[in-house]
Length: 54
Figure 1 (cartoon, rainbow, N blue to C red):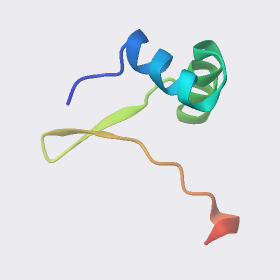
Figure 2: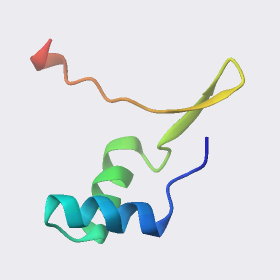
Figure 3: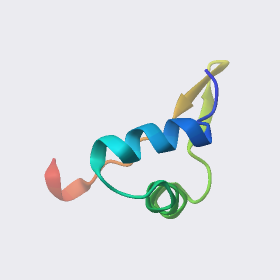
Figure 4: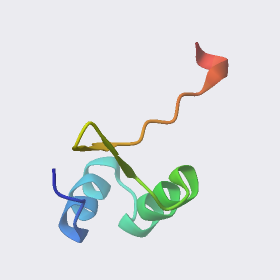
């Protein structure tokens, strides 16, 4: 799996109606600058579970 590119952020930002810099800022803050981790040799996205929703 490839890491997200600037074009990926731009595409999603356009869909959401926000700036790509805002998406990057949230990603950095919520994942402590590590959006992916390695699990059994695969590069997978980190998921932050909000305990109060489960």
